[in-house]
Length: 107
Length: 126
Image (cartoon, rainbow over all chains, first blue to last red; front, side, top):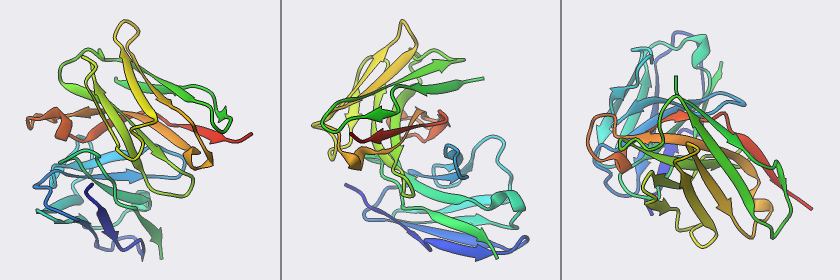
């Protein structure tokens, strides 16, 4: 199975900050890396797929990059509605494993 | 507008079988463009992929659950279902159904989950 490791596990930041979350796969997953945002009591929402493609309706302040085993999610200027938990997922090989999540909190 | 809705008992006794159904509206589950999956999230923990099914019945399961999991599809009702046998307290979680698509990039099974149900909490307790 492919293990996905996110860092950090939690992060405090302020509105307007630039934030980067990292996801590392235990083996190469090509570009099959997806990012989800989840707010308390809600289902995950797809933000970015295939490493860097923005899902319809997602603001352009979200971006993704990477390849192989190392990937990043960047939020260029944090907005109040961005405080949530972010999870990466590899869809290269089943089982389609998720990272443990990064909780983004208001400083 | 595509919608997915999970349904089933919220409380299951240990050693019994958990059964959930996902009803899809706004699109046909028989579309050749998608897989339909189940993902769960124990309270306060991360997401765990359970498995996924194509309208033809082709399935992929998480090996950690494979001996206990069955995912099936009923195209006449536009539904797919999850059965998890011999449950324990460790199976207590919010269970989500979701659609998996290729997003125009080729192999569907390598696509992301772009639409999700709201989730349903299943508690395993006597």
